Length: 263
Image 1 (tube, rainbow, N blue to C red):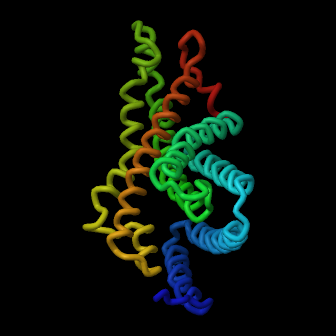
Image 2 (image 1 turned 90 degrees about the vertical axis):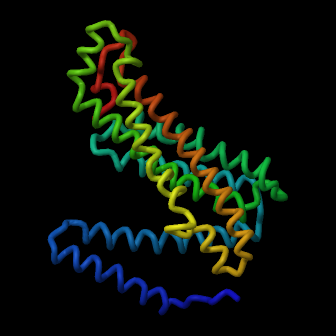
Image 3 (image 1 turned 90 degrees about the horizontal axis):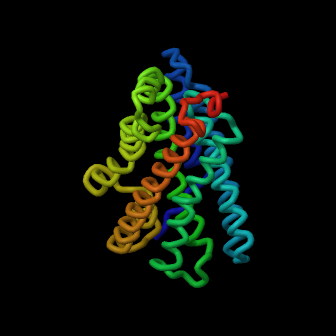
């Protein structure tokens, strides 16, 4: 039996966030405002998506599903761009972020809906939106970490890269070890999540299904599916963004050019 939460129940939970913000303010951490803004955004955004999904469930149309997916991918691309220590030029940074998310999260979700889950219709919002949301959230983190590591390390080691180019190495060879470490950085969160699933933590989708009354074994099956899809999506996304960034770091004569990439 599903226990319904009231607004009062949620307000009690929000007190914990307020206490954390107060503690951060007292310790002069400089993140209390960010915590409060993030909490407000979470509340508003989730309430809005709840209303949107309610309407979509009542009126299933592929055009609305694709519109929601486009908005989700665009916002995720913008969030990736905003998390970079060294800011990329918006036009290019947003393009490669959205492209990487489309190649990874969207295509993996589409494959899962058509081949594995086989919902009727395949674009039913009960499956399509939650799957895409979970893949985007995790892939976004991996892409942001990999991108930040590649740009930041390349900037710090630009003299070394230029020396390698002068010694006759190609642009691919000059940046190969940095790209490899960036790939590792982007994949570490999801690898840790898979390694700890079931022993250290109960993943979100599994927990939600169990709380909603689903059989634990069925919840586990869906969670395994989600973990595999997220891993594949994150991997493809990180590979895509690192390849696109690496190409942009050098001009047609294989010279290192940060002015083409950074603000």
